[in-house]
Image (cartoon, rainbow, N blue to C red; front, side, top):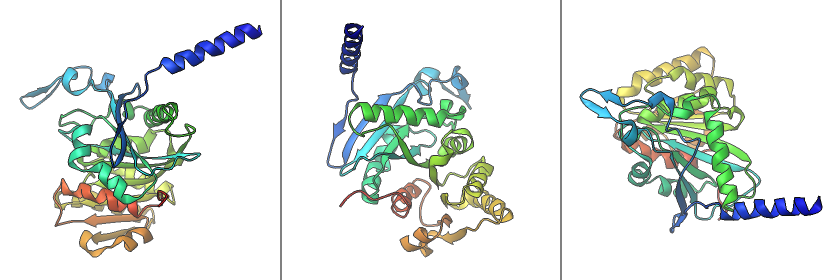
Length: 294
């Protein structure tokens, strides 16, 4: 019996050793990998047929079959008993590789000084679509985060696959993924902050409802002129629920102001739709996540 158990343990250890680790790329910024995950948004039955938008056909093969998830660990990151994660959902006609590079998301995470790991799941790849596949399913976010933590633990990046705080952000069409994660992602107790980056296009009731029922939750929204009415609708819902918030022009506030208020709406006339993504660093920096060691 003891020999049987010993052999079983040996077999399990051998299989674990043979399991391919993620391919991590190191730079001055930190470590990054892009890996396929079973819990990634796509493929998914919601997009099992080609999608036609106007005269353009977005095929399943080219736009809804990539199970990639990008993970970035900033230089100086200190693993702990729990792991805080920062998720970013890209917008229409974009993909995770391009979004991370163009919007300098790694650089922004590093500059924020927060001890957090960036996670970017691939959405509809280079398509004008806000769908997010498996993350629209109940517990979809929970499954993605669990798989992410298991990978990080298996690769020796963290000591245990225990989830800490979760920060959600979405730019433009990425709003829908954020809304669905708030509604039924399955990690309500861990969701501490949400950043809408010119992204309040729809499902606005999910944002006001989340900020209302979570008394310490932080909601930051920056928006250009075309989304003023949508953001004002969120504010109206919060006001009806007697939830305090601040509404300012982005040029009127500093980091101390952002630290002092948990729900903030910033109207910008100086930043373009794409340039609003530069606010990720400031939102992260002024949030409650712990800083990396100096």
